Length: 269
Image 1: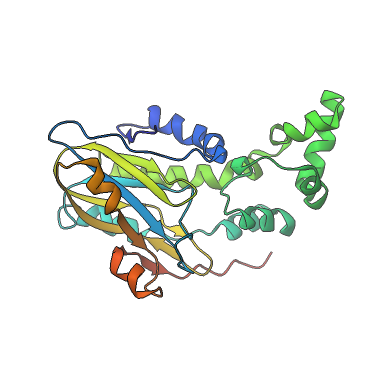
Image 2: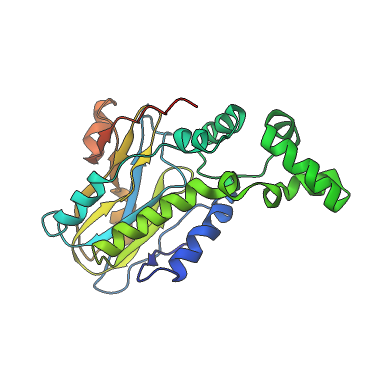
């Protein structure tokens, strides 16, 4: 079972856990919920993204549970909205990444090359991977070993610069608001569980906009947590989405929609 993380300070277990999660979540370990402790509650979060179907969940993205109502967190929310959007494509183009690498990252919705293991065919298709494997082969004397460890021979900006930039922005927002929040990562189906929650009002947010195919989504959804049986949570997930273009039944089940912002045009190289 995966439980929420408490965020208290930079360099805490959360910061280390974020880096580790890049590898751990590629294993697609599904989250499950446990029964809440007496007098406490559980939220089963379900995130649907367009084009919406039963199967289209937002996978491997972090969401936060912020204590207090929307009104109580208004200044924090405004700071989220005012943060400029920096798209993955624009970041990687700005550091001179190849179009092949940008396409590889986009195909799997990756923020860094740690998203998943690079297979042999992909090495030949991406110049950065080719160079890293060639360097590793000289070092290790074995091409297959060099492929498995190709990340160590990539420049830091290429390896995980975009991810680190987003984490710095995230911490700046959290620290600026003096927020003490809980976080979870969605599984491959877009589900996640906040467990052992004190009853009261909360805001579910991604804090840093999530990039989609044609826009950047920011969720700030107020939810009231009550002590309850786990079976009620399983039957009634708190579903959110970035579009209302869906079948009536799914629309009826959706409790909150994101605020969308267009992705910026990237400067010419």
